[in-house]
Length: 83
Image (tube, rainbow, N blue to C red; front, side, top):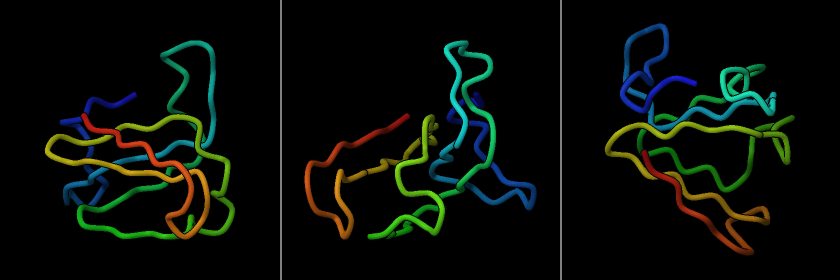
């Protein structure tokens, strides 16, 4: 997995978080598969098509916080992640 400080897409802008679709019991293989990039200040009450219940790994950038909810539209239990 990339470090929190390494979260930058190909165009060089800063990312707040990256979510990954594939998982593995081996740490070096856990951040694989499709990637969902989250820019700073993004507010997504619904996961993009094809991502609901699919994210298995995540990395949150420095000076960022990612809040996720157990139900759509920011309902249910929430959990906060940071670097």
